[in-house]
Amino acid sequence: MQNRNPFSWVKKQMTRSICICVSMMIYVITRVSISNAYPIFAQQGYENPRETTGRIVCANCHLANKPVEIEVPQAVLPDTVFEAIVRIPYDMQFKQVLANGKKGGLNVGAVLILPEGFELAPIDRISPELKEKIGNLSFQNYRPNQKNILVIGPVPGKKYKEIVFPILSPDPITKKDTHFLKYPIYVGGNRGRGQIYPDGSKSNNTVYNATCAGIVSKIVRKEKGGYEITIVDASDGRQLVDNIPPGPELLVSEGESVKLDQPLTRIPM
Image (tube, rainbow, N blue to C red; front, top):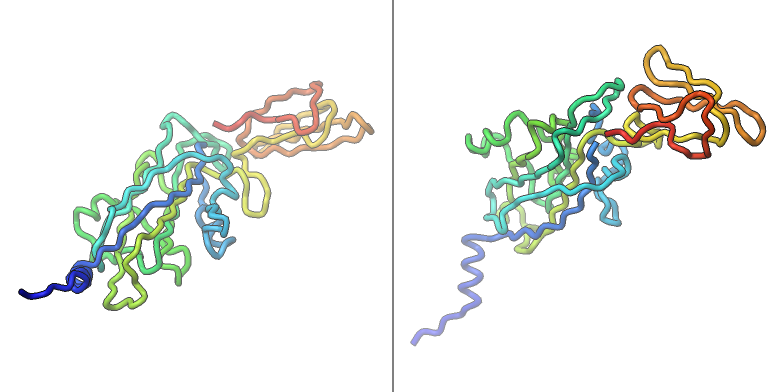
């Protein structure tokens, strides 16, 4: 009777069909509320889109949290193209304040952080069926040397509530540091424009508050949109001017008494 080494059989099977399992750890930072800038803001300001705390840097500009979904295979073969589907659901009735102050449809964007060795599939490896699912989307690496981190957006949310990333798994024959493990995947998605720019200044897609307590003595509508709200400080009579950009709707009127940090504009919807 021939003795069979079970470990030899396992090793042989792993060599023939190496299976890279992917366990999903999803960190979601989104905002239901177009910026021509994101995710460029993140790329310019942060070397890595995921901080040591696990927080995705999108959260520094998009202040509210909403869920996104990701769908990937439980396991993939080496040197194989597969789909990572990111879904960014939101109420299609929502409108956002655009940079020019007008209301418009929401744009969406996403950042996908894959394990080392995984990368965007080259065009010649993508099947016609997968190309049809991708549509006209254009993906880019977060950094030229970070092929495992992909970004997309802004793109029209009405058309791309579901974004299909074409991913190529690593080949252990050419990439010796590839191991047969379970890997985490991190995804951040955003809907609409952020409330804060990277320099800390507010966008017009947020609430503006009174910088002092007092009486609203004058409201001037600017020629290019927005308002200058003059408040007479209740403590010393000084006149302070709060500038409101185009877009936000006023909650106050001349002669009205306001408190410190009281909202002067409505919450954008």
